[in-house]
Length: 421
Image (cartoon, rainbow, N blue to C red; front, side, top):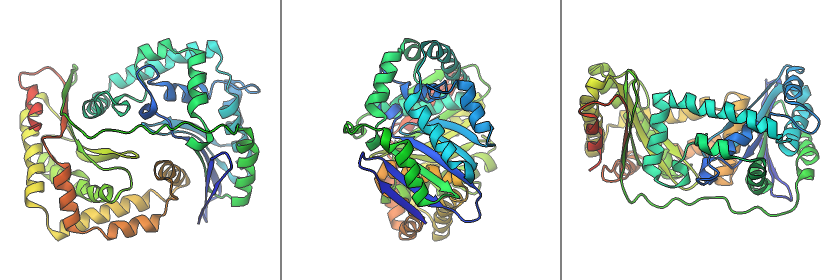
């Protein structure tokens, strides 16, 4: 059973004890990412994630790595649009070592100037690596097209020029302003004891924070008021097409309704888009729909990749299948299948400590509520076919969508722009 404690500073602790597990996962989650950045600081959240591994007042970068290797554990981190996470997984007897190490990295990272300059090169290489992956470029370009100049339209890693210009002072100021307890959650899952977790969190985190209140970091997104078509020419073998439609905010009733619609339309091998585009016409290996959702907004992405000569036919079939779904609706059996897929996806994500740790912390940071799997499943069960159809008709509005093309320059690449009406 999950338990929660909110400390005086505003720091949240979530603990989920799991039977039959002999490891413990400890995660530090901060509500920062490109969604709270601006054009000057874009990429800072991800860059700081890197720098916390580069040495503290009492440990070098190598000693940080050796510390976790010496206990046979794992230490890693990730940054998304709205959350940055640093975490460990070890045998449960090393839980305190994990918490002490994460605390040392979080509070006492040195931000050594030489390390910063060296790591800039690494991050720039990561950005260039992403630029060499056309599907990654396609997804980033779609967010930019859909959100325009809003922070959610910016990439997680930022632009190379931003990283190159970053200074020790600017990075530390950013961290001081946003890496604050009210904007954080500590999560422990696996073979963990709640009282011990409370004591460790108090010792290694709560006692280190000042009592200064955090600023409001939630960035409100206006309604979509324009549509955009963007493209990037790359000498690659496939052409990548993606379309974004207005979606729903994370964990809302509409979010779950669109989740069911997404599975029916493009969420599995028996989905409509998969059957039409891959199985019947052989136009693509990869085709899917996927809902991206944040605190107060979201979008539904439809994506596929094909040979450049087939883009016109692919775009035509994608659009016609979406229109047919919205116009004609669906049978009860198809609805039930989509509902079970959504529920199964949630349940299967709850069968390992790392997945649970991330799900619980992300859910709490986005909603302010404790993750309750049974409650979520009950909410999904209550959704009717009529509710899903209404949500789908509202979502798949071609007058409000944005579209992107990434691939070779062809005579007909602008056919993708025809998604927009």
